[in-house]
Every structure is written in C-alpha cells, then in structure tokens.
Length: 228
Image (cartoon, rainbow, N blue to C red; front, side, top):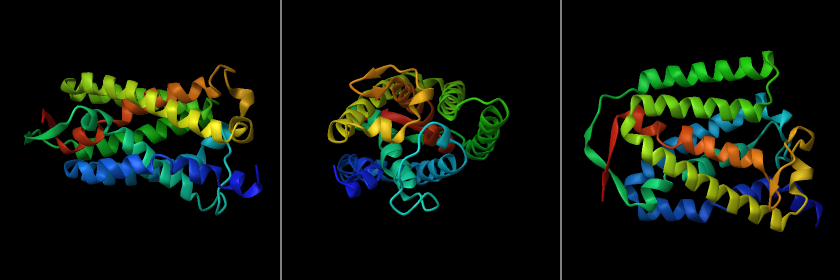
C-alpha cells in the first residue's frame, strides 16, 4: 500500500458515505435543510473535538495537515448528518405541519454547557475523550427524550441503524486498509475487543451518536414527525 493512499486514508474513508448522503439529499427534499444544518454543526463540532480532545484516542493523518482538518469537518458534514436521517429516510417519515414552541435558545445553551462538562471530564478528571463523548451524547439523548418523549422510539431505532451503518462502513475501510486501526488509533487504551477489526469503542460511540445526535434538530426547531 503506497504512502499516498495511507496519507489520504481519512479523506477517502469519510467520503465513502457521500453517495448515500447525496441519495438522501436528492430524493428527500424535505430532509435537505436538516442534512445541511446538522452537517455544518457536526462538522464544526468534529473540528473542535479533533483540535482539543480526540488525539488521546486516535491520530489520523490529515491531507492538509492537522491545523487544516478538512477531514474532521467532512466527517460531520457527510457522515454524522447522514446518520441523523436514517430513521426518517428508511420509514418515509416527514415533518408534520404542526410544530411545537422552538427550544433553540435553551438547546444552544445546553450544547455549550455540554462542551464545558466534556472539557472538565477530559482535562480535569483524566477521562479518555472517546468515553467522554459517549457519556456526553447519551446525556444529550436523555435530554432529548425528556423534552420530547414522542421521539424515544425513533431515537432508539436510529441508534441501532447507526451501529449497523458504522459497522459496515468501518468494516469496508479496514478491508481496504487492514492496518487502519494500528496506524490511526491509540490501541493501548482500547478494550482490545474487535468485531471484524472494528474496535468495540467505535460501536459504542456509534450508538451514542445515534442516540444523542439524531433528533437534536427537531427539538431545536419544534418539529413534529408524521408518517408519509
């Protein structure tokens, strides 16, 4: 495997879900706004996380260097936003014309506090960033369900779908790039449990991302879901 292929591994791996993202984007016009807004938010969050925290868990190679982490932004824009619409796309769920009062201001405050809590857990308590993120996302999911009990079933289903999609995605990556884990992950902190080369931490993170990130957009904007 040549050096260029390895150097661009993070870039091409985050692009593998781009065709599926585009499929949703062009087929479901009603989900475009969610894809775009959640993608930008998660892209920015991924960049911040990569610059401040996640180097204690993994250290990928950035094509343009670590101070221009295009891949982190693309991960949020493409991959993270794609998994937020899995439930709605699979079951052909639309937004209802009825809406609830927007919780955008409180949601933004809550998101800011979550980052502060995460910083404290990682920097002050010494918790590894992957476990801190899992805890944070599960907390956000709990907050979402508290605010919107009607979203409990969609959140749970979307979390399971996210694990399946991430497992297939990572399995594909490691089939193409077998040494991907040892080259990029800090393997000494892993549980050393793998499923077809996929670290179990990534599956826990996938579940928590689906749990905490799937319907944050809905509670921020007071959106209700309706069949068809």
